Structure formats: structure tokens, C-alpha cells
Image: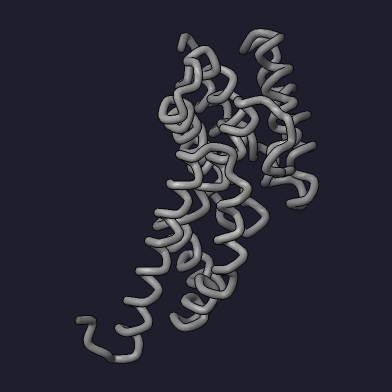
Length: 205
């Protein structure tokens, strides 16, 4: 991949520096975008898809949430596509940019069999997966600390939507994605069960 990843990350950081996302999490959005971009490349490789997808997948994943600081969640994909085009015109090739913009525009519209490209599906899967596992636990406790929630509130939040989250596995487009999301959800559940015992003053054996 010939893409200048460092330059793209600098552009993203400069654009979002000091901004808060819709949940008030600040730097979370930048870190989430970088992790998603790297994870999308890992998924591409593990799924046995061609390396020629890497530039497109990385660019789209890196900027998929670039408007989380300035738009309501339901409109952040469309807003992000416009913002990405403005930021990256002249930075990456025109064809690459247009393809990446289209992926960003639909990245939050997930359907199991939608006929979209492998590149779009890799970005969608990486985005979803990054919200779970230890990162979900960290984000939940960070949000709880910011808003004065106690430990039990945090644990209940982690567990409340478990069935809904398990349903997300069906929205994954590749077997490697389904397996990774399953592992992360299992890690969350294991943490929840351990934390429930500890917070109740129970032995953990």
C-alpha cells in the first residue's frame, strides 16, 4: 500500500482536535477511526481478499466518523462524506476519494446481503467490531465516570443490550468478522460476570 497513512492521520487529528463526539468522549473518535482502519486491513487479509483493496479500505475507515463531532448520529455518515471530500481533495486520487466517500456515506446502513462491495463491508465490519470487547468496557466506565454513574449502573449498561449486541453478529459480512465480534462479546460477558461477583463481595473462584 503506497498510501501515506501518517499524513492522513494528521489530517484527521487536526480536524477533530479538541472536539467532542455525540457522547462527549473527545479523543475517542480519533482513536476509534484509527483502530477501525487498521482492523479493516486485518480483516481484509484474514478474509483472503486482494491487497489492492487496502488503500480504499484504509482511507474510508479512517474518515468514516469524521463528522461525529458536528452531526447527530443519524446524520453523521452523510455529513462525514461531505467533510471527507473537502479534507482529502488533492490529497488522494480522485477515483479513490470518490469511492471512499461513497463508503463513508453508507457505512452506518448495515444489511447482511446488500450487494455492496467488499471494501464497504470491511469498513462496516471493522467499525462495528471496534465498539465491543475491552474497548466497550473502557468507554462505558469512562462515560459513567463523566456522568456520575456508579459501578452497578455501569454493569447494568453493559448487560442491558446484550441480546441486541449478539444480533449484530448476523450483520457481519465475513466469517472472520463474525468470529472476532463473538470473541469480543464473550470477553465482555466474562468481565460482567466477574465484576458482578466482586462488586457483591463474593469470592471469584
